[in-house]
Length: 368
Ligand SMILES: [Zn+2]
Image (cartoon, rainbow, N blue to C red):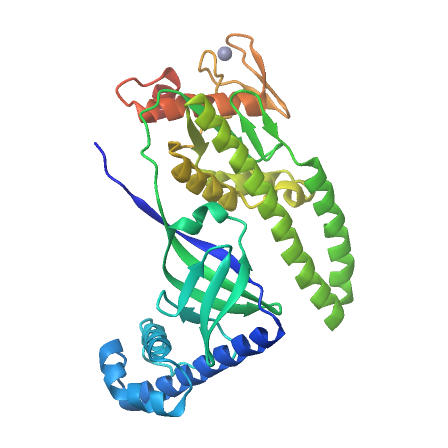
C-alpha cells in the first residue's frame, strides 16, 4: 500500500530588513490593519460577514482609500471575514501592529535565502534566516508577517510529505518524568541536572521577586518565564531528536506512555519535587517526538501507563518500586526502576502493534 500523507507545520523565518525596509514593513503592517478596521466597520454596519459578499461590499472603497495592492486587500477581507467566524456578536478591531497575512502572490522565496515581499511601495527583496532549512522546499500556502520584540518574522505554512512508515517489530520504550526527563528501554537516560539546578535557582529568584510585587519585579518575572521556556524547548528538541535518530538507525518504533498521570504522581512527592519535574513540558516533548517520528518515518505508539512502573519486565509480576530501584519478589530481579518501566513500555508497544501476539504484560494489564 502506498499513499502519501502530508503534514502541515509552521516554519518560523526571521526577516533581516535594512533600516528603510524596516520602516516600509511597519508602514505596510499599519496600512493593512487600518484597512482591516475599515472592512470590519463595513461588515458590522451592513451585517455582512461572508467573504465574497463582503468583497462586493467594500473592495472598491478600500482600493480607493488605501495604498494596498489588490491581493493584499483580498487577504485583509479574508482575515476580517475569518475573525467573525467564531461569533458575530462583537465588532472586531485589529491592533495597528498586529500580524498580517501573505500568500504566494505577494510573497516569494528566492535563492540564497532571499525573500521578495510586497510593501506599500511595491515589492522589496531582503535576506532571511531559518533554522529548519530542510523544510524550505515544502513551503506552501499562507504566511503571517509578525512584528514582535522589534523583529520581523514570517510564520510560513509548509506541507511536508510523511515518509512511508515501515512495518516494524521492535520498539524502544521511553519512560518520561519522575527522576530523569526520559529513560529508554536500552538503559540510556536523558537527564538534565543542569536544567534542574537552573530551575531551582530561578525558583529562588522568583520567590524573592514575587514577595516584592513592584511593577519592575513583575516585568522581570515575565521575562524569566519566557527564558525558561526557551531553555526547556531546546532540551526537548535535543532529547526527541536523539531518540528518533536512535530508533531510525536501529529500525525500531518508539513506544511512549500516555502522560496524564505524571503531574498527579509529582504532587505526592512534595514541593521540591514539583519544582523539579512538575513544570517540565512533557506535552511539548511528546509533540516534538510525534512530529520528528512522522518526518523520519518512525512509528510511534502510545501505551496505557498503568502498571508499567509496578510490573517486573522479566516475569510480569507486580514488584516494589523504592526510589531508583525496582525489586521483584517473584524472580528476585533488581532493576533501575525507570529502565524497568521503559522496558515494559517497549513490550506494550510491541503488543499493541501486533495484537495477534500479545505479550504476558499486555494480558496482565488487561485482566488486572
Ligand atoms: Zn520478576
